[in-house]
Length: 90
Image 1: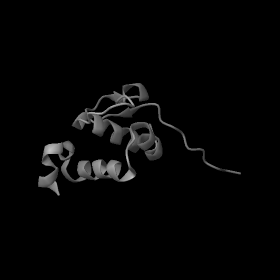
Image 2 (image 1 turned 90 degrees about the vertical axis):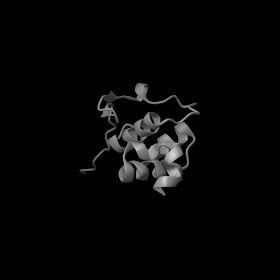
Image 3 (image 1 turned 60 degrees about the vertical axis):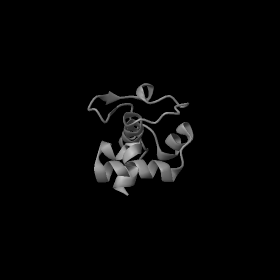
Image 4 (image 1 turned 180 degrees about the horizontal axis):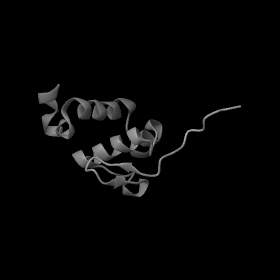
């Protein structure tokens, strides 16, 4: 019957407006999470390059941590991801 198969994207537009592929994402052993890297991971999940589960496993994130990044982007833009500004935005 007509079951839709979920298609994985191979390219999404990143936070800077440039194309983003799996090879462009931060390395799985990333320890220093700057704004751009967080935004790239959020863009990859939103665009279908990675699933939420894959991103959390790959970067050793909790679902809550990832959703927090996503929420801060939605509320405050990329500046919301700045670690030094977290107290201001909450």
